[in-house]
Image (cartoon, rainbow, N blue to C red; front, side):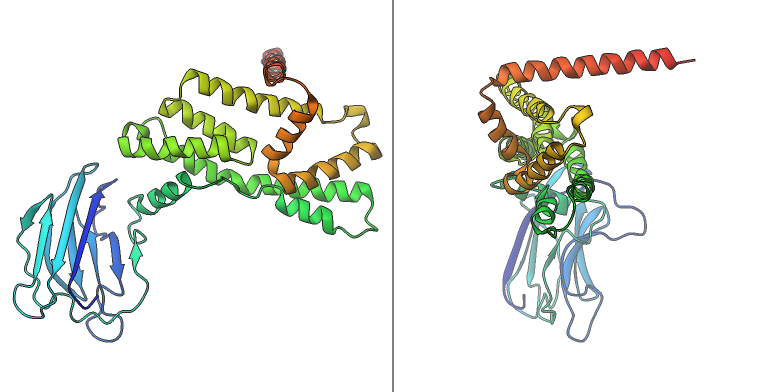
Length: 322
């Protein structure tokens, strides 16, 4: 960073700058050191954007509004004397005195983008953008459980193995829930009104619904798809397959009176091993193909069963009400 350089970027504040704070959006090294091996530079905001080198704060850009996009550019010509830096805001040159530019930077640390600003979602935007362009959504749900099933000592009883594996799969399920909550908050009904956010969330919906490996992936993808304007036909198709897979999962469960039989315990162990190998969606799609039943019929039965369950729960709640 000690030669001619131009930095150009778009920026939008997601929240006002709290009093007494100086959130930064990018930096290299220290913005307060003046000697030593960590003299750096960066940008931070105080309601407007400020460029800082070491402990020198040459100038600042004009005030910015929350929720509005701005284009900022800064160019240093490599000279160490005179008026060597030009700055622009939305294409208009900004008065900017920066004698000695970046010539005194000594830091060779990692360049940081977004980490310093706890009041903006720059890092979250980056994560969601990468996820929206992923080849798959795979939290590896069931992997640990499957590994445990394969490597369980041979002298462990079937009942003990069942208990261990069901505890493990419950723990795995709990660990992945937080990530879906973040996605749901990021792609809220309000936030998708922004064209850029809507584009990212539409891509996220597609990845989760069509490339996900769990029923939760598909369900969250379906929810996002409805928010970003999927056609009724696409919503119905994804919903039908999800509900059909859920019905296949229900059908595979043993009857309550046989739940603790050796056959039932053995099947659960095999199912959990397969879950880790193919993923939840992969396993259920295999079972769906093997069933020979139609997606539409299985989906219908799942919805009827869910409606009956909800009706029974509501009746029980009403009966027990004071």
